[in-house]
Image (tube, helix red, strand yellow):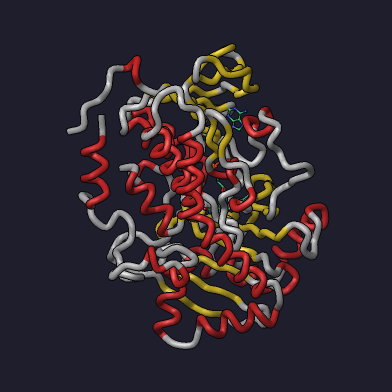
Length: 425
Ligand SMILES: Cc1cc2nc3c(=O)[nH]c(=O)nc-3n(C[C@H](O)[C@H](O)[C@H](O)COP(=O)(O)OP(=O)(O)OC[C@H]3O[C@@H](n4cnc5c(N)ncnc54)[C@H](O)[C@@H]3O)c2cc1C
């Protein structure tokens, strides 16, 4: 059992933002005996515009947090995946069954609220309706911040998990001029879904969306999360996307998947997706950026929950091995880990995105996926981040169980959980 230093010698960390990135960082810090406070300007339950899809990578990281899926209302495990090529050809894929979870849909309103509850049950202070305003300065190796309505506070480190429009980044003057995200995506919920989209996850590569795509992700109770995302600067502007959204919902293949009685409910929401980790600001003195605030989403798919959870874990590890008062080392350590974990995958996603940008590329890619049982079986696992995007080109990450590991939550007492429990304070 590791000995825990007395409180006065320990870091006192502020996490700004209680989304998946912030909660993951807070739990990993807490496990290492570090005092951590999380603030969020919202009050939970709060919605987040998202597809609600959890990849194998994201599920493994949630498992590692000892997070329990049964605490999330309408958590939906999914095995069947249908891809539609620009020509209209359907490719049916299946994730493994009976060996843990490889893909799930968890409405963010419920997922994020359960994550906050989980952190609180572990003893972490999560304070709602408190907004980070600005960094006031540095004092004796600490960072002074202004929180509304708490006022001036001092911490040894700030973890900025405050999303795409990071107020921490802005207060450091590190915003990129005119940066509005790399993707822009729309989402709405459907109810009374009776077609195959009731159980199957659909991804539609319609020609006018490439290299973007539209999706329908099934949710328990005949619901689905339906949406589409496009690369900024590609064919449609976000304003044109509004009318594109209406036309998309009327397309015969979308109607056929959802079923005749499906109705769109709640309001349609849109939000940018930041996906440029290789050029993002990752740290500043006394500050590390994680999740959307560090632009870590996958530039091929726009998925960012797994990436948010992983960057939160890496930030906690970096802070835990830095002496108090050292405002730079954790940032350097963290940047190295981010480079190792994300950069090769980002570059691979950019290359694949360029192939998918053209109908001929998207058609060819889907034809290759559909060649044999082997390609179908393994592509779907790779697509759901069972292995890193660039696994082929990064031998340091090769392992004997390549695409053969069980999914997340395969056993209640996984190796992950045992080591996590040992770390607990
Ligand atoms: C339409 C759409 C579909 C998507 N679909 C998927 C998908 O299916 N799967 C997937 O993995 N990813 C998906 N993503 C990406 C995913 O939603 C994000 O990458 C993920 O939410 C990032 O998590 P985060 O914790 O970094 O940030 P967020 O989830 O954005 O959390 C940031 C938190 O910070 C708080 N905050 C902000 N400013 C302040 C402040 N000044 N003070 C205090 N608190 C503050 C906010 O209230 C919020 O709670 C999608 C994104 C979009 C837009």
